[in-house]
Length: 69
Image (tube, rainbow, N blue to C red):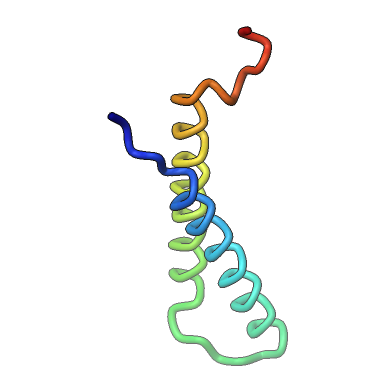
């Protein structure tokens, strides 16, 4: 039995996108955030991880290719 990572990947992806938007907005208003570049790189890596989780979970269910019927 495989683990369904769809919900986990979606939550990770959306949370990282929202956090990145908040961080970018704070930097636009010249708010000093320590280690902001490192946090942005970490968020980008987590977005890639979340997207990979979504792709791999949909690949196992056959939902990615509806023409295989």
